[in-house]
Image (cartoon, rainbow, N blue to C red):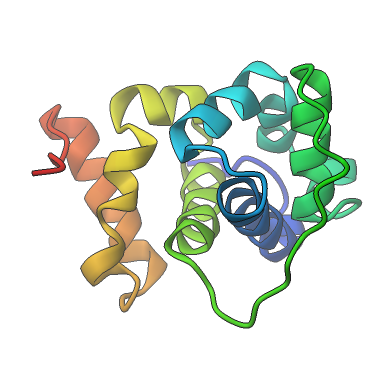
Length: 152
């Protein structure tokens, strides 16, 4: 299997996606699914998937979130980030989702079409305590089963 881009960018990519989702939810006030849809529709997701180094290592997650909102006509640059020491569930999801996308070379659109972002977020417990490869195996299983978790 061919990975999406060179592994040298992977840790930066993971941090960018993680911080972008955390900032979008907790500072910008977006629902994670709505923001992720904007991320995909903005074209930034496609650049990320293809390993555009400007996105993966040339910007912070906050800057990428601002760019997404700018492209979607919802400029939020007046909202300043609060940098907390804690890592949110959304941060974790960005961290593992970037790895999954890199490993599988699937597009983010394909991924969330098969396993919605909110369903992946439900995997936080117990998967945040596990190796990222176990999360990847679970998502692959959900793809093949055609099943998703339910919120209830």
